[in-house]
Length: 589
Image (tube, rainbow, N blue to C red; front, side, top):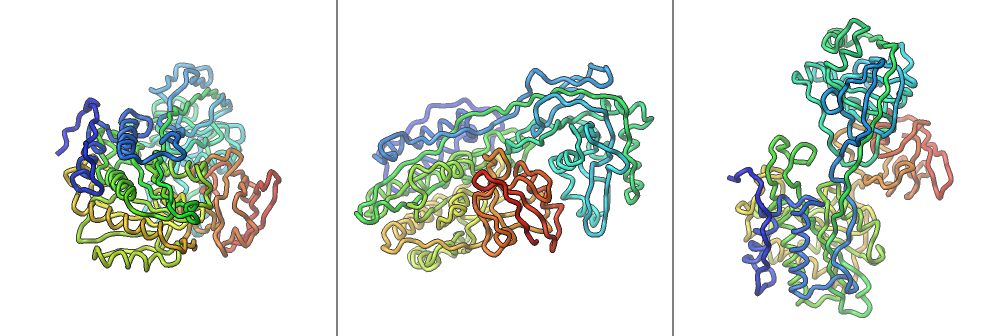
């Protein structure tokens, strides 16, 4: 078992006498990549930088060069943390003694600025109609220009009713509803049933740079009860009232006193990088066609809340031996093996950074490719290759190119895996970024396990014999793609848009949204599904959605929130920017 403590960074030594696809060196590499000294390989942290340097040094030692003799590194920015500026303060009706960090805290998706208005309590902040149920916690109040106080989460309900409230209970969704009502800001407060301790919500980066467009803070019950004093009610009493009378209309409570809040939240950015090396093709006609093969090398650092760890209360090194140290070292061995194998097409090896933060490295590469994207004829991705069990080997994306299924079956005649095939090209790993660009993909892994995203994903649990076998299989698949005279032909296989688990959709437009959120004017459409409502309504790839039914859309969260408000059979308007000009589309859901 791991000892949970901070380990000092140690010098990393590279083994001499490297041999291609040797189980000994897979283990030796992974013992470094997944060591405590690399502290979980978090992007932008020293451990992540050391992992990148280790990979580059092995490439150099084996004579595998960067593209064009330039740098192995493709740097890009990532947000690693949220910090408070010194400008934060709160003044309610002349009372200036509310302390940031003690009585209240801005949330990470708050807009920056100074927000002033009177205050109104709107219960849980719901306003929706769903399954014949209408809930409007803004009943009887004009929230325009006001701060709205609301409870987090949802009321205590039976399981059936809880499902109705759940899509509207996310904090970003509640903030969007408040914004639609004209509020200048939201004050979230936890009811006693939600959190008896009344801890402030941690200031954590939620993997989106998009803010809510209004002020958003969390206050303790004690602090909010000071604001509610003139009503004669407390949060504890109001929470009980709502739960006891949940099927009745609730009158919002006006507090005719002013609140002024200055909010400053700063995104802390740092640089991380993709690592890229190449082997030029040997055929005069085919060398300008490229096969990309990749694996992400980052992981979760020490874990903690908001990191993606399945044990967020445990601060310990998350070594990520399988996820994705196994893919990282397999790619190193494949690169070494391919150096001595004839290949007509050129091959690009990419170790992606910041996959765990939302496929950021692969997304950055496909938006800033070092070669023309239409020269990439196929992409192979490896993620979690080290826990082969019962001889089951998983391969996704087999429907994204003609003949891929037959190719894998042909290669498997030698290896005799129990191949589990999936046609879809979409999935929660870096191949999805390429599939969105209409590039054939194949995605290999040995399956999920209980140690996934915990501190227990360690080297001693890796099946190195199985890892060597899966790496050899992928090498042979790569050789087939690199040497066939007929290049892989792309075909769509499965939705490119996978709905977020955080929202339940009654409808879908059938688009691929820009999850990275690089477009500041609205939500960029990365692709449109054939035959879907969006395509039938005239939407095109590259359109920027700025409004749905007249309600603004600034980012992916706004878009997902708008989807929850739509119904099947409804005809909606979608405002888009196309080549800088605004167009209004009619879309039948």
